[in-house]
Image 1 (cartoon, helix red, strand yellow):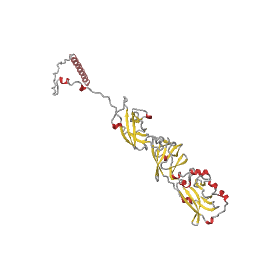
Image 2 (tube, one colour):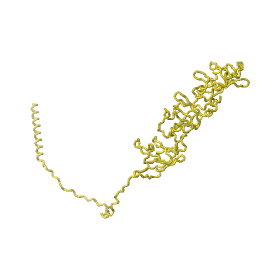
Image 3 (cartoon, one colour):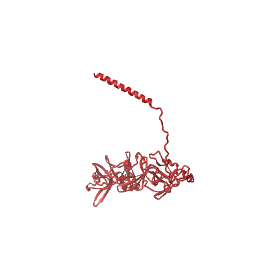
Image 4 (cartoon, one colour):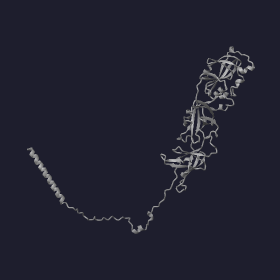
Length: 446
């Protein structure tokens, strides 16, 4: 029974499909092949007449000049350099030629600087290769279509800006751009982006520290024993530098200069010897601070350097305890115990305390080495015997290792220990304080 029902359902579906096919074919064949289109035109619309419309003759009388555009080529204008240029004035190096009338300019946001003499031109160009593009001074001051001229005055300069157009004519522009005044700015560090070196050291505010510079003050040793040869140095500030493992000293006062050559600083007067070399000038001497101006070789850059005063701690009283008088051998020879070692000293003998102990400077070479600070350490100078009231004392002078401080000391002579031996005059040269001893030192003060 169920199977018969499914058969009848299938037969019904097939019949319905055939009916739909027949209806579709009938519609296809009964549709017309041409579609009728109405050719009726829309009814024309007339716009309302404007109240401002004139007759044709009124328009014809106007002509064509009202609607003709007049062409004018774009006019070149001078760039506004007032906020780009900086005036630094003349080269301030102490050894610069005083007859030179060159003045210096800088450009904002660049490392460039340019020198301009009276009557000359300083050329500029717009460098599009920079990021961002900017004005720079023309390399080698090669001619370009843009240049400046200057009339320097006291602490300012009048700047004239000129530019040439494509036709070779000088561009005329408002006076505010073509002529303006610039006040002089401090020359120090104007070329801040410039990298330069002195020896192996990059120049910045720490240069003196990296050169191991030390300043203790004036050399008290030269004040006492320098004589005529070192009289000038005794009045100046001593600077100590270390070059590798070698120490050397230079002496400067306010306004003095040092120039850099062969890996060290040299004292000299500004002149041909210092030209073209880095120059260090002492500008100010304060109680605990030295201020310098450091110039590069051509004077295009300057930096201010400061050096603090070094302090050496020493105890003269403790050093004095190292000396104990024992006896007098002759009228000019005295026996001391120095750190448990016996030494015979005569007036003007020098003892230096080194790492190996107290050593007497006996030869000219040893004295020269101490003067040049190749030998360093506290110095004891035996000055001789002086009378104090009813007693005699041995007098000496102690210098600290840096030779910037000294202290006089006195050693009592026990009367019971004095044994005076009469010495013939012809024996004094051998026994001490004679001509041979005097020849050991180059100092007039000894």
